[in-house]
Each structure stands twice: as C-alpha cells, then as structure tokens.
Image 1 (tube, one colour):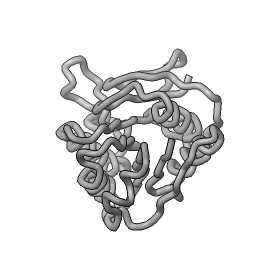
Image 2 (cartoon, rainbow, N blue to C red):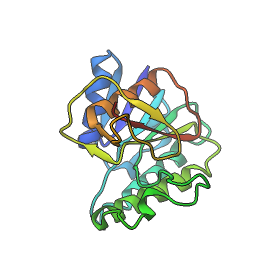
Image 3 (spheres, rainbow, N blue to C red):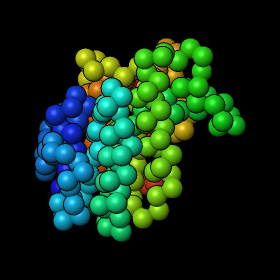
Image 4 (cartoon, rainbow, N blue to C red):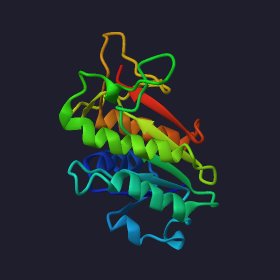
Length: 196
C-alpha cells in the first residue's frame, strides 16, 4: 500500500508518518505547495492523507482550499483521501444543529481554525466522486501527549471517555488514522476519536 502524506513536516503529519512507517507502510512525505500537485502526482498512491494546518488568517484558508484542490486532483480516481479534521464541528445536540464551536464557552483563539475546518467538512459532504474520510480529534488535541496505543471511536457527536474527558494525543490520533488506512471502515463520512 502506497501512502502520500501532505504537510508531512507539520506536527500531526509527522505523527502519522511515524505511525505508518512503524507498521512497515510505504509512505511518501510531500511538503511542497499543495496547489502545484496534479493528478499524475497523486493517483499513483492508494491513499492521500491531508494534514494541512494553519493558525493565522493568512494560512488558515489553506485548510479548506487545500482539501478542495486535492479533491479536484483525485476526482474519479480510486485513491482515497483522508483528512485531518477538527473537533469544533462535532455536534452537541440530538438535532445536529449546534456544534462545539457554537457554544459560548468555545475559546475565541480557536474560532478561526474551527471555522475553516467546518468549511472543509461542509465541502467534503458535497463530494461524491472521491472516497474521502474526515477524522475529528478530541476537543483537547495534545501535541505532546503520550502514545497509549488505544482510543475510542465515535461519529458525528461530541463525546467523552469514562473520566468525562475529551482528549487525545497526536500519537494516538495517528494510530486511528493509520488503522483507517489499513482497514477502511468509513466512506464519504466523518468519524471522531478520543483517548480512553
């Protein structure tokens, strides 16, 4: 299985690369400008992982725009697209009208990133000609968190573990991402993972 990791030098991307390589998978790290990538560059891979990030007003739009470009490149191919998502788009009500990012307690400093991740997910939900998957992390996404080797899986809704906590390390999130690469369970949908 051949995997391309977009934005492999980012912290999440690097964690996924490390996990994938530890399992003997063939990983190509791509750190060039995503908008220069063409169909011939990516359809030779079985899976493309989009780990594009961006916290500033200048870079945050690359999250949805990069995903849109990758979809345009992969449209109609057999190459799967797995997208590193956000937690702000998880629903907190049964009617699925209110998300985590809409809550008054949601930190102002995360609103920009949450909004571009929401835009990405909204767009992907309209895509029918690419086998995409959007993976949301826990609310507390810990760059320096320990690798426990396990996680809990959910769907569209915000959820917590037995301790009442929604947290996961980058390392455990990477396990979930690579598990989905190796043993696909999702198609054109979002799922979420948190630490046990």
